[in-house]
Length: 243
Image 1 (tube, rainbow, N blue to C red):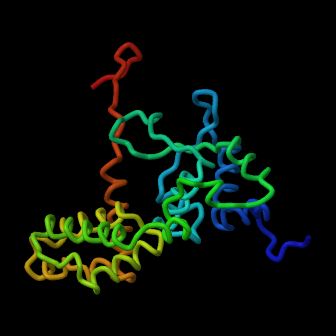
Image 2: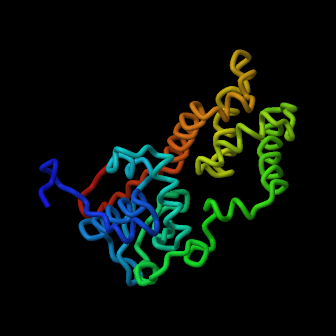
Image 3: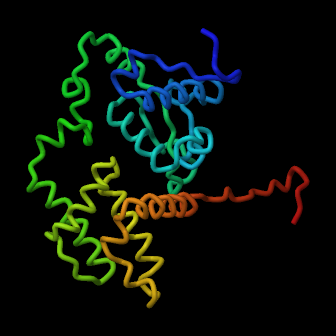
């Protein structure tokens, strides 16, 4: 087949895409490529280390929150395994990734695709959402509002239909409760002591779809910067180094 654009392409398996999604299959293929070119052997497996920000630079058509959600989805599917135990510093939360080929082969050999049977632990599948009661969902949202109240010293109503609608829309987009907490922490840090901005520590501002992604990007960037550690310089005087 003649390619439309004459440049390097990543092939995507149709059968795999039908099971986990086109974007997920594309990211998995990209990881396979990186493992082949830049993988590091550890504990009998080949691993690839990368930050969310650098994933987004490599796959520039996805922003950081999108990459984060795709990777988490593949982790929930158990098709990729991630770990930070190989980092030199315990404060470094950068992840290492490898492909679980056993799970991948199991998936591809399944003749009839049934998401409930293949991926019972996936948290954001439509089937799981249907089974989850409205009461439980509203409780999760009420806890997010409670967290905002505690952090920002506010008194927003956790049962407000407007607040519930805003946060439910965010969660339905694939963002997690942890993402909501991260945005709250970031904006409280930025605005709590600013008289002009403190009034914007409210659900309608924080969880407006156009704002939330930007706030989450800022929070993830700051988190990555805080996790970065410089390697201490060790002088070897026997090699002639001096001070």
